[in-house]
Image (cartoon, rainbow, N blue to C red; front, side, top):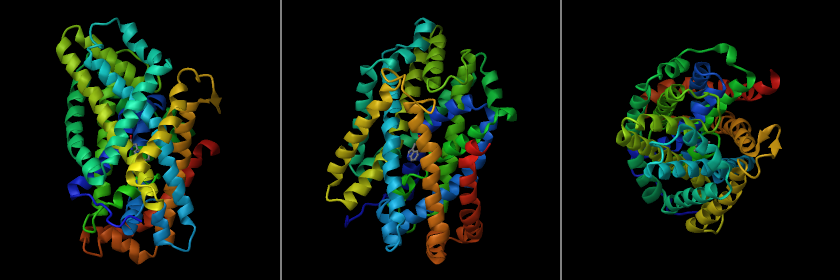
Amino acid sequence: MAQNRETFGSHFAVIMAMAGSAIGLGNIWRFPTLVGQYGGAAFVLLYLVFSFLLALPIFYCEAIIGRRSRANAFGAFRKLDPKGHWHWLGLITVVAPLLILSYYNVVGGWSAQYLFKSLAGDFVGREEALVTGYFGQFISSAWAPLLVHAIFAGAVALIVVSGVKSGIEKFTKWTMPMLFVLILVIVVYSVCLPGAGAGVSYLVRPDLSKLSGSAVASAMGQAFFSLSLGMGTILTYSSYMKRQDNIAGTGFSTALADMLFALLAAFAVMPAVFAGGLEPGSGPGLIFESLPLIFNRMGAGLPLVSTVVAILFFFSVLMAALTSAISLLEVGVAYMSEETRLSRKQSTWLLSGLVWLLGIVWSLSFGPLADVQVFGMSLFDAIDYTCSNILMPIGGLVFVLFVGWKMPAPDVYDEYTNGGTLRFNSRIYPAFRFLVRYIAPVGIALVALTPYLF
Ligand code: TRP
């Protein structure tokens, strides 16, 4: 067991690290892709409802377990319930984030590639078919994606190996405020494009007929994915919180920042999709096809502005991806360095290497392995589906059931209200308790099962 466990330096640092974890490819890449596939505004509405009603309670539960125990996702359960078997369930939430990281790294690599391309001025003054066609050509080639995948995975490991304070905290504290400024610039650019109005109305006018059972489950999956829930990430970061930090406040700010960023990203991407005359449901390539097309088109008149906006956009995607990927890796690293004899450094490089190797499979599933199908999905879609729609709800259930039904109620109250000193938190505590014990477990189970029931 680590003796001198690190903590984050300030409350600001806690929020930036949490927001850094939450805001990522889930917001900029996954959210617009799903919104396009599942029918626009109706999906957005469901996502918002699930975020408050089901996701936020899980956030609180993970934070309560993490800060109470000051341990990793496996050790936490052993500390809080030494005689029980919950830590084996905790182990799922140590392995699952590494699975997510293995495909997250692949998309992180794509964003690095697109940053390099925009730095080279490749999205300006080209033929349109070449610009949109590049994505398909790039991901289906064998070697190019593997190279950037390795670069991205290496960068993630380098930040994590530097530690909680001098790696994670330092990196997220500077990156997150900058990201908000950048995305605002891009939203303004995007909604001003000719033809962007159709994209805006797509995002604000719900069409309920498009909602299927799997749309409902995926909206919850997205709410969990976006807030980094059910996988021990929030638990692990919270274990680095100080006693005086406010769990309820941190969770609420993180969720708000995350939702706001998802909406901003949707307003950056969808208007560009419509202005470019592309299909909103075109899948994982959505942002990598629509935005370069728009940059290229605008570049005909304003080459410099367009190049700069392209660079800013893909730089933002890359930074957002990095701040999230480090939180995924930290779960495993905290576990391994605290529960085995390996040092933080050894754990980081070992896990990163394994995760990178596994990622090669997902990367190749767009090229040489494209014909391999699991339940009608590509390997990449299958692993994403398994993690978000199956493992995350299970992880979420473990956390809410543990806090709602297993942990002694006075301990839960103590963490949520800092020993009763936070008056606002004490006042809303009964509502929180009710959500955690009844609404969240039933809601999560029901929504996760919708695709199989309806
Ligand atoms: N929330 C991040 C995003 O939106 C991804 C992420 C980081 C994540 N940690 C997680 C997803 C833990 C699920 C669980 O991109």
